[in-house]
Length: 158
Figure 1 (cartoon, rainbow, N blue to C red):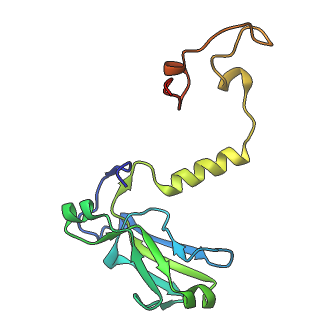
Figure 2 (spheres, rainbow, N blue to C red):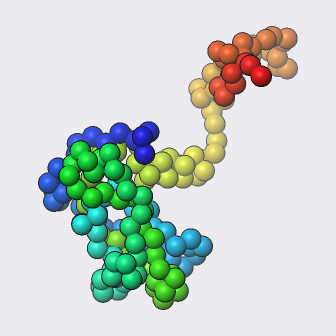
Figure 3 (cartoon, rainbow, N blue to C red):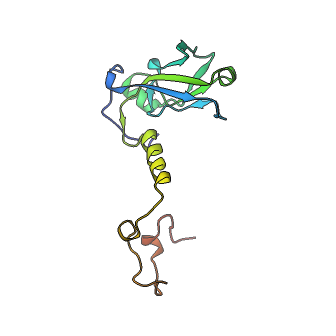
């Protein structure tokens, strides 16, 4: 979680602005995990409901992925992932997850998923306005690139 910066932290763990309710379908989920859309969240705030009935921690689910550095700073337990029991996966089809997120994340999972969905649903690229650095002629005239400065992901060495 080093790559995620959290801003506007809810130090009280009670600010209604940071309270979330999400419905998670288990119907087609092959893995026994729920990752709330706006993690990390305060552990004590978590309530998981099946049709209005609360699930029991350490029976129906466990909390995973502690953020010890953040916990040390805030003095409260913080999690990112919920692991469901086999019984919960088999018996429940849809769960409501209620939690208090720690703060605003500079890149939330929800933002990332929404961005991917937008890209997938709008695959058209405007060649004239969205593609930069195009060659003047087609096929392009002979040219070279500096592998160290012009191509992402290449170091130029072996």
